[in-house]
Length: 234
Picture 1: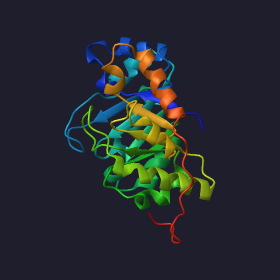
Picture 2 (picture 1 turned 120 degrees about the horizontal axis):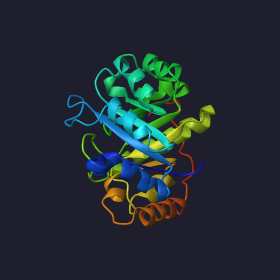
Picture 3 (picture 1 turned 45 degrees about the vertical axis):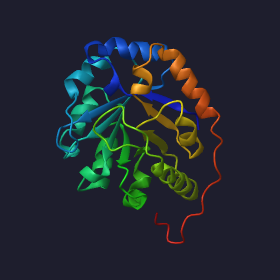
């Protein structure tokens, strides 16, 4: 699968979000990653559907909306109506995860599920047939600019092995501390979509940074598939 770069506007200049999106698009971004936080599930508060609807007018790039909110099932339709092409929910925030993922698909968007660093892969094994994307958080969510946690890399390897074993086609995404020094290891473990915030938006040349990250990702030799336990649990 191709490597996709998804700049996270959490780290962009929020007074110039439209300009920032156009700048990373011109610089070669594939997707735009939009983190939605409610101040409850994570200790931060960000944007909602009205701002996403305004930003939707600035680009045709895929809007990868990550809902880090409690009870996401109550507002999924609002985010899709605002322009979300894909909606990812946190497994830890969903009482009925399978139902919520089907709700996203029925509303016309790609469905994604995210797991925090402390959440095991087995917690989402039962819904892998209902997702288009699995997001592995490589930091504890809530704030940009955090340091990458390499201990989550085996989760990518396990998910890649499950995808291969079961003939699935979902994308593997990683978010948190992704920069030119960490992206190759993420690619080697099977990551398809790389979310990067401060690593891109805190640089002066977005195009050069995106090109450098893409080059490093391509040089991350994919590791052999791991052997899954007999019971499939990880």
